[in-house]
Structure formats: C-alpha cells, structure tokens
Image (tube, rainbow, N blue to C red):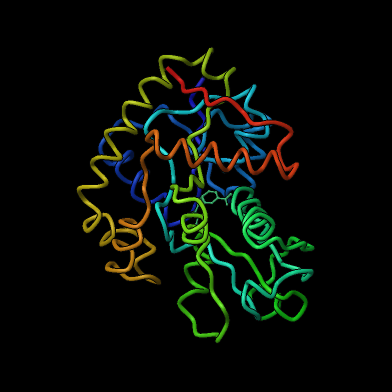
Length: 273
Ligand SMILES: C=C(O[C@@H]1C=C(C(=O)O)C=C[C@H]1O)C(=O)O
C-alpha cells in the first residue's frame, strides 16, 4: 500500500516538499494536505502514516510514534510565523482571556508555558478561527501560526506583537522545535523499507532546498502574497534540522509541558532507524 504522507499547507513546508517532489520519484506516495491540528488528528487515528506534525503530538502519544532523523521545523530565536498579537503588553496579560488559533497544537502549549512559567500568569484560553480584529473584540490577545500569522504580521494594527520563537529563546537559550516528522510505529514496521527510502530522500531534499531557496521562491504560489525576498528570508530563519541542540530544546518543552499537566509524562525520544 502507498505511503500516506501528511503535508502542512503552510509556506514553511514549501521548500522541503518542493525539493522532494521535483528531485525524487514520489509516484508511490499519497500526499494529504491540511493544517497541523487536522493532520495531527489524522496521524493519531492512522489515516496517514507519517507527517511533519506538531511536536506536542509526539509527546501526547510517544508510545505509538517514532521520529525521522535530522529533520524538523524549528527556530533558534525568532520564527517569524508564530505570533501573539496583544492589546496590552504581555506583562499585563495576567487573568486575561487569550484566543488561540484552531490550527495549532504545539504553539498553543508553548504560549501557555511562556505565560505561566516566564510571567507567572494565570490565563483563560479559548480556541477561535476569527480573524484578528474580530477576535480582539472578545479577547485581550490572539495567537496565530503559519500563513495566517505571516499575513497578519504584514498589516499595521498598532498592537503588541510577540514572536514565540524569540520568547522561548530568551527564556531558555534553546532552539524551539515546532514540528517533527512523526511516523506511526505500526507503519514503521509494515512499510519499513519505504519509510527508510523516504527518510533518505527527505535528508537530501533538505540539503537541496537549503541550496535553492531563491529558485523555489520564484516558482511557488506564496510569492504572490509574500514576495520572493521575504520568502527566502523566512525560510532562512527556520531551521529544518534536528540536532542534539534541537533535541535539548524539545526535551525542555516536554518537561515544562509535563510540569503544567499538558503531558502526563516526559516522553523518550525514539528515532526511526
Ligand atoms: C513555525 C510554525 O510551525 C508550526 C507550528 C505547529 C503548531 O503550532 O502546532 C505545527 C506545525 C508547524 O507548521 C508555523 O506554522 O508557523
């Protein structure tokens, strides 16, 4: 049976998927696109075999997953697409209600950690898919990720804007891993050779992407609303690697998530081989 691969339909995934599809035979793959929260749910139920998925999804059910090596969606400092848009400074958000995008599973928990652990705040949270101006009629602040965050950050709205990659880095000095390439263990057993081959292709695709951001940007649909220069700059901001330093950031995230009761325990990191 063909490998079913989730594809996040955000600009941050464009370089890897473009390099994969244009340099390697992908006829045996079935790509399923969606936003992270939808793809996380599909991975959890086995509707897809593997996916660049929210890192917290691995932590929630690590006993049924493993991770592809050397690849992630991370930042070492600012990420440029995960923003809290706030009517008041973050220091003044204690006891306030914060709106959370329905598309994210990791960043919503990163925000909870930053508000609780860095600022000592207690907050109420509510999921919403309302656009910024509407959401801020009901909430003091709104968290957005992905293309919606990129687009909203381009407009002038006179708000306090916080980059969560930067807040995390200031707080811990570590990279933040937003997404991991998560593989279901049952698929890893049944389709081992196919997943091994895909892992090799992705590693090569990552290198090819790093070397060809300009040409990928000049030929992708996001350039229409973002422009090639800003896209290349964005992709250079993101780290697609998964080094021991990234894993240290990931472990710290899992530790804080367990301390706040978001995870029942700190998961072991198991790499597919
Ligand atoms: C950097 C980003 O990382 C993302 C954030 C995710 C999350 O918060 O669950 C999931 C996948 C990534 O696409 C972004 O989407 O802007």
